Image (cartoon, rainbow, N blue to C red; front, side, top):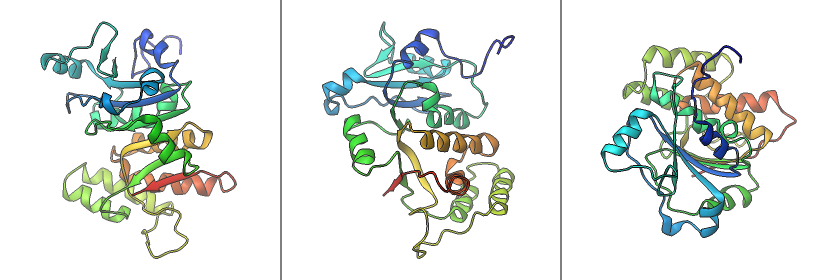
Length: 260
C-alpha cells in the first residue's frame, strides 16, 4: 500500500521477475544460518527439469554471509549449482522457524504463475527428478496435495506431549493453541475408525508436493494462518486446518494424498 516502505519478506525486483516466470518450482530456505546448503543431485535431474523447473533457495543476509565464508558463493547469475539464491530482506518474524513457513506454505503467492511446487526442508537433499515426483505423488493418485504422515506419531495429543517434553516451543503457547483446537472440535485420532478422514493427524511436513489449485491454495493459506496465529510447530495445526476446511466446504472436494 502507498506509504509503506516494506511489506516484509522483501525480494529484489529481478528475483521477483524471475519468480513470476516459474511454472514448476522446487523451493527451500535457510534463515538465520540454521543449516548448510544441500544442492540437488544434478545426476538425477533430467535435462527437461534443468531447463523448465525453477530451483529456488530463499536465504537471509546472515545465511548468505555464512555460506560465502564457507566457500559457497553464487555465480554472476545468482546460482549455486541448480539453486537460484534469493535473498530475503526485512524478515517478518524474529523466530526463524516461523519465517520459514512463508515460502513453505505460500509458494502460490511467491510464484504467481506456477502450477506445481515441491517443498523441501533444508535438511533434505533432492535426489530425484521433480517431474517424476509430481507424476508419482500427484498425477498417478489424482491428487492436488501430497504430504507424508509422521513416521512415529499419528495423534495430535501425542505430538503436543512430544513437543513439550523436548521443549520445542513455549509450553503455555502450545497449551493455548491446543485448547482452542479442542474447543473447535478436534478429537483424538482413532486409527480403527473406518470413517476417519485422514490416515494420520500428524504429518512429517519436510516434503510437500502441490498442484496450485484453488483448494490446495486455500488449504495452504489457512495452514499458514494457524502458524501465524499460534506456534511455528505446523504438525500441531495440520489436522485442525484440514478438518475445518472440509467441514466448512463439504461440497468442494480436496484431493489430499497422505502417504507413508
